[in-house]
Amino acid sequence: MLNIVLFGPPGAGKGTQSAKLIDKYQLVHLSTGDLLRSEIAAGTELGLKAKGLMAAGMLVPDDVVIGMIDNKLAQNPSSNGFIFDGFPRTIPQAEALDVLLKSRGTGISAMIALEVEEQELISRLLIRGQSSGRPDDQNETLIAQRVTEYNTKTRPVADFYKAQGKFHSVYGIGEIEEIFGNLCTVMDSL
Ligand code: AMP
Image (cartoon, rainbow, N blue to C red; front, side, top):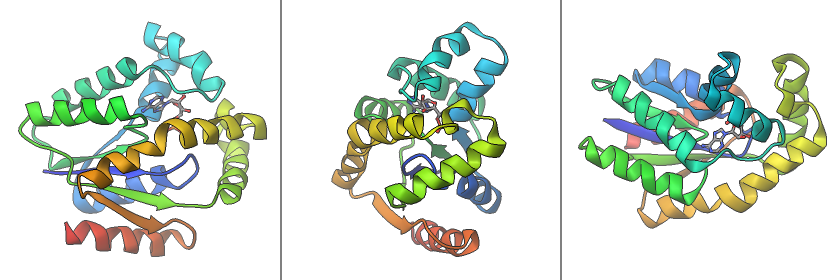
């Protein structure tokens, strides 16, 4: 199996590039942000719990997202592999993911980080907010809060994979196709 953590701050292009990667490599896309938004849209108890935190630009509790990933892994037993997008976002999530994959006889093949400077992220997210309808893309204070969560809780996850010799990075500013080509070069080297 090819199991990839596509990593990067909010607005780095993870969703856009995941869609292209799953198409080319026949992988299953697991975005915890998308899964949480589906729970909110369906009005579930989990969605209700997550809604306030997401709207405030805060991370939802680890056990909530780990449980969602566990369910999705169970639902796709014969997949070629997974692209994890927006997960793991904390060290405990990364540790739990290793345990979940190991129990299924597999593991993470690589983390690929999309590197984008902070000022570019903020302007991309403000533009996305005009059409996405996402409440957390609507104002600069909330976006800054998400970037702070990323810098304090999520950035250290890269070190977790560096320690395992699985870290790769790709520059995330430029044409979508050019960035995709650079991601594919890493994918094909795995
Ligand atoms: P995203 O669509 O990945 O930008 O995620 C949107 C929001 O969902 C984040 O700002 C968090 O509030 C929440 N979220 C998504 N994935 C996670 C995760 N792995 N851990 C904690 N919170 C998450």
